[in-house]
Length: 338
Image 1 (cartoon, one colour):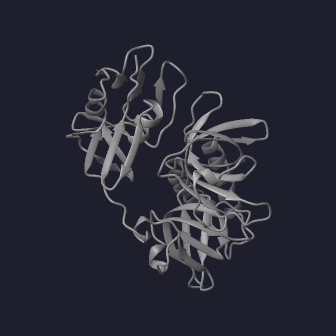
Image 2 (cartoon, helix red, strand yellow):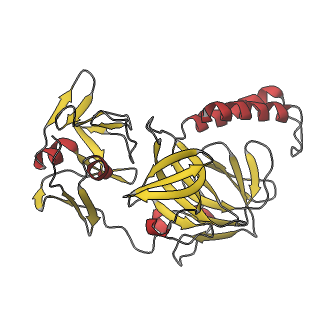
Image 3 (cartoon, one colour):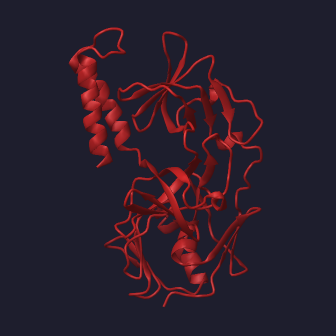
């Protein structure tokens, strides 16, 4: 549904541009406007995140419940979920209380369960009257006729204008951030009280916070060792776009769980049916005990004929205690699926 709205809005914007938009300095042809809109549509169609607004309504483990009107949703979180306040201060899961206003950057894919579930990448807590930042992953950067840097978001919804008065800052560090940090694939939070009604919306940024791992005050230790119930095992660790993944057969068999592969369906089952877990390569949808599927930090991937799943598969699906500290991933499970 989100994609259809984007397509319709962008095509409408293209038609407006072709007929002379309020902010345009010169008219462009309808053909040119539609071509430009189609380029944005193609980029937006590949973007998998959505913005959810709601009120915190409780928590269960790493799962955060939010309500929007009469709609309730469950947001799965992990150690990689970023929790911040609207003014850019880092907080923790425990700082979220029932009744808090939240803006969540979540995966577009949601389960069909009640309540529906998604995975939250960023959770922004804000107070009434605060300026809540716009989250953007940058697709392209250009310089306009006034010398401003203009960053276009991957969802095709924003053109963020960064001028000489724009404050640039990193998140939770004292390092200096320059315009060189505003580049393709960079992740930013942009603050502005002004925005055009066009699509993409043009917003002159008063402040931009760069969410970049390379700007972190301390380098994150890459895990090199895997422990299963206290025993070190020889298991490859894959860093898949900042999501650590482990081989499902190697880990699950070490936990005492049976693993089966269906070559025709490209599907894996762990444990016994009906109490086991099933999932398919490339689909971020994990079904446990024949219940509604869950969305995790990543879909299963195949690497040299071995299936890898994210760490939260072992914690959220299998119920294991999983830690990633000081270069060691530890998976502990005493209750098996049967």
